[in-house]
Length: 172
Image (tube, rainbow, N blue to C red):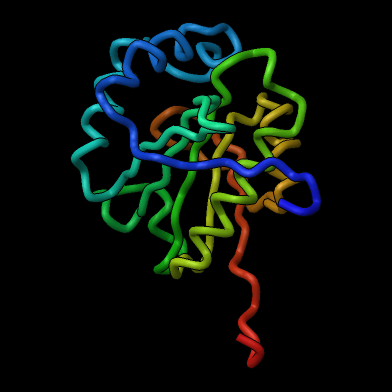
């Protein structure tokens, strides 16, 4: 990009990514917020064929640096975020290597992903970090998300945040 901002590529997770994902999920900065490695890998594998969730790898210059996924809460039975408007997608992200955390990749990846999701018709994007994950909350705020409320998800308390699609204009 002309402004020097990093550009990321997103691709679907493949089975060949599982050794890398297992390594990332065992990293202390990720393990603190995720479940057991085998259970998480099974969940990711299930998501690879589900209609509600799309698991992906974010790459920088062809090198995998993060796991991310987006999902439609309206396609999951009894999802706690079905109170959100139709066209809402939820996202999750984890930067794989600890040395890449805290230097702007998270918020930059999220800005690029949300921009692409909005371009493809999403109306609202939500994210739900643990209320104690201050670093993630700051990254999401930096990406434009605003606090909505505190909820209980299947994983426990969630600092529920939202970002709405930019207003459409006659200039498009």
